[in-house]
Length: 229
Ligand code: ATP
Ligand code: MG
Image (cartoon, protein in one colour):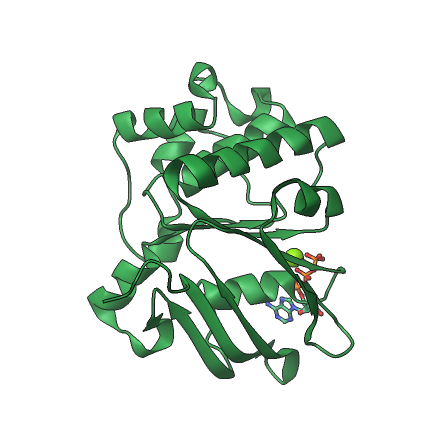
């Protein structure tokens, strides 16, 4: 059995890249359950690449990705699917479907990711919208929302399947400082109230200081972790 104090994510000596190109080398860190873990680094340092390798979109070149003690890439079929269902993801620039209402968007979490038909019931979508403070906007179209509301709807969608770990790639990109701080507060509240682990890619030092329990800084020169704290 996995004790709850064991890391929910453990990355061991990960090497990652695309084609011939290596982007990340010797990446090792672990994330505790309920923690807000931030991945920081300049543009092109491999933040999104790291996220995509943790969530199983790409296989590591070397090293291991352990989720709740299980090696994601050693699992197949149902076991693998069940592990992937522990994740909720908001991709960088992850857009809402413009032709659907906010509620409909939340009802359609990203099935491209778990390879299953995943429509959730209206009641579930409603409870997620309530958790992000968007119930009153359920019938609106995405184009009617502010930038911050759109981000909250995307977070509600990422949480639609009650994930243990939510990955957010640049959640406050494009937001003004006030909306960005509101979003930070929301993430903090969700982590506390529902013991959700957040792994968050960000450029925003303010976000890190405000909510992150731990942070790693990626260095594009060495392709390694430059600092952690
Ligand atoms: P940003 O802050 O701009 O989002 P990032 O830290 O998320 O940057 P990545 O998107 O992980 O950086 O990209 C790291 C490097 O990998 C870049 O040089 C990028 O061009 C390259 N890269 C990213 N995705 C792919 C891909 N699918 N195929 C080939 N190269 C890629
Ligand atoms: Mg990125």
